[in-house]
Length: 502
Image 1: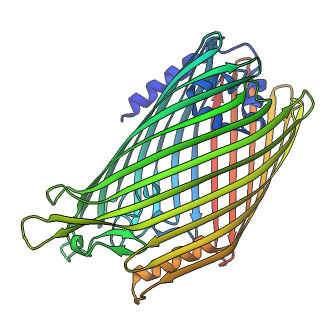
Image 2 (image 1 turned 60 degrees about the vertical axis):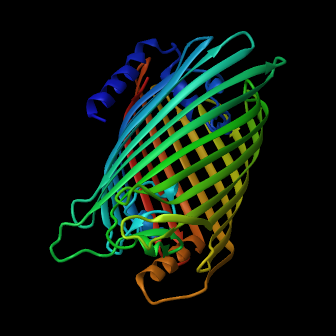
């Protein structure tokens, strides 16, 4: 991906500037960021439903910088990030029957102090990452495009969407990974009116995912052992050593169903299922398939939104369940030239269950609007490796309160947000059938301490929009998240961005 391609997308998005509706840009921004407009976004997984997402068209082009300092985190994800971001997004109603939408971004930055992971997209491919005991900072470049189109007929709508993401990660000192990721998703959906108020919709999606890993050492003093991890600190003994290249070949599919009011005023029901699997292939060793992952995800939401000109009430319950299973191939390695697969075994599982309830009270007056949104979540995570037996079982309760306010002035819109969250580990345990005094077990202790710690979180955000012209707006936005953990460590994330909306 070149900057030229990204620039052309931004120019195309900016070309919509003179085609937007004549409604004041500040009113359109106010609708876009309102809590009521974003209360039930699961509807818009289906591209056929996008005509109901907003009343007005809006496009945005921005540039920003993010810095994170994380005293505690999974070691495989590092302890911070610095990145520069360019982002463009557009939602445009061509006419009453045609809607287009899209976004694109480019990121360039560095993840700091990554350990026990020389692969990319850890949350996608875990636990089968390539690792060593050294680690370090990792530089990255990432870009993504997404675009879609929805066509409305008298009572029916159809929609299509496609998204592509590419990632390059590398390090210029030993150990030197060079990882490239390609991730393609396509969707198609349909929705149909049921009477005058409600509609029912369904969509399907397909995914193709690949990642190539190549690890090199240039030091003349030697190199550490390279491990191919299999979960909770266990690694494949047969592949340990100097097997430095691997390839992840993944695919996914899913479907969802929605019942919803076309004006987002009433009950919403949505359910979905997604499946993802991949093979980890050792490219230096006759394309040996070392292990495979299969993950199933079930999700659902029921919500209710009651709108009037003066106030909005909302209530929502949502949940999901994921079941991730890792299978390792077992080989006969008596031959020095090739390995012969003799069996396979399911040794790794990670099951996550989540349920959350939330409410909303919102005063939508454009001159001065404000909202209160409380919430409560329960989450259980059970991660297990069979032989040797290792297990983490953590149950968390999370309470949250979000507050927002916005004031519309003659040429400005000032928006403020504050969020407060507290998480308590109701139950947690880590079982190990054996324990050794080495850095792998130190990593397990560190990760367990992070996952099972109580924490308090405060979030603050402010945005100032200035109407330069009827159809053109300049904005400045900043966000701050602060976490205080019970293990006396804290994490901080700060973001600042500037841009144009039109």
